[in-house]
Image: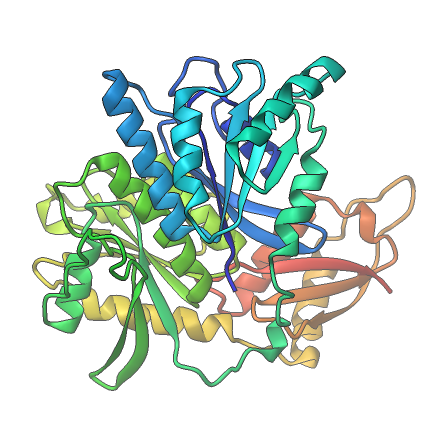
Length: 437
């Protein structure tokens, strides 16, 4: 189950600060020039054992007042269409503006839960001033300071109450068809890849409110291959403003990731891997999905002897530390190597479901531990006695040891590299846990 929360509001009310607080990391660029957040920011928030996707709709740089208002209103509409819940941010220090009022009017019409957050409420006087926001007529209202974090717990409690209890990963049926999501930024050739695979043009989703905006699932069974393709390209019309398109595609990609077993991340060979691509990549890795990198439009790149090798090396530097990922150079237009891409995706799917016998695991990994011991901590030698694979969808391994809390990242990386060197987990994130024996 994927649950997505979109943060909306006019520029400079503190959306990015709240976003960073929910994700517990400084990810968005926070500055008080309005419209600083150009790139779509997205990530995963965890609270009381439940996790959900968070998307920051970003501010706008106004060319003129009315363009500005229509743009923001559009963003709110997208958030209403695509997200499961909406955080509508306002700022007590400026009071209610006309823009806030028109956004509230749009939001009052939706059946989705809307959480009105009055930000910058950091003293008793402002607490009193904030009561004027009740006049916006929204049910759930929270006074908080996203800078200091006061009031954020109540908001998170209310949000996570809406998220149904997760089915445990073991309950998920194993025998369903593999699901591959084609993800990536707009205009990298996702639709062309889908059309090349299926051999026919997909329907264009119209922009009329109420037409389906969901991801399209296609059952693919040709050449003895059988899987479901999840298409996130959705809106094909190129006359939409870039911002809208990007915002849609981000929410779509995040949703499609949740449904997929393997993500086919399509890159544009001419642009290389951008910060936004790395963002998408690390999100898929955090969600424990299999990943294949497809470098599209390879036919347009000038090549010499080592072009592909060099290109792959630079790609992997950008996505480090998780670099055990297949990279394939394709051309959707020329249909070059696209079937190979599906073969690799099926291999990655198999790797994600790989189960290693406990005896084999201990035989291989205890040798690796013998060859290079964990560093001594406070005079104690760290001993790893036993290893087992956990019954989870994402390949996860428990190492039983006398000092589980004292094993640091470099040694964890060493163990992961040994696992990858001995067993094929190409394209799949691995999780390692240290447990008290």
